[in-house]
Length: 54
Image 1: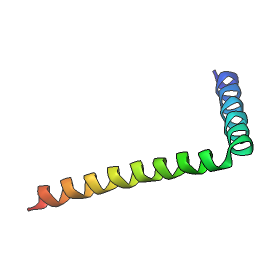
Image 2: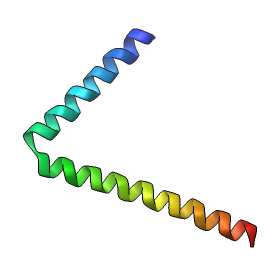
Image 3: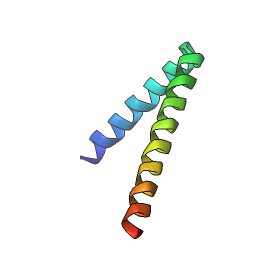
Image 4: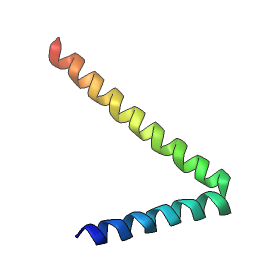
């Protein structure tokens, strides 16, 4: 099981490096979309907690 996790991690790392090297602009866009998604989720949790308190 540990060996499988290592192989999967290496595959993900190679894919990320390949994406960044071949298309840095696209990689930057994907990172921005990811951070926007995290930000939206955090804001949603904050709104929920605020309504829960009120």
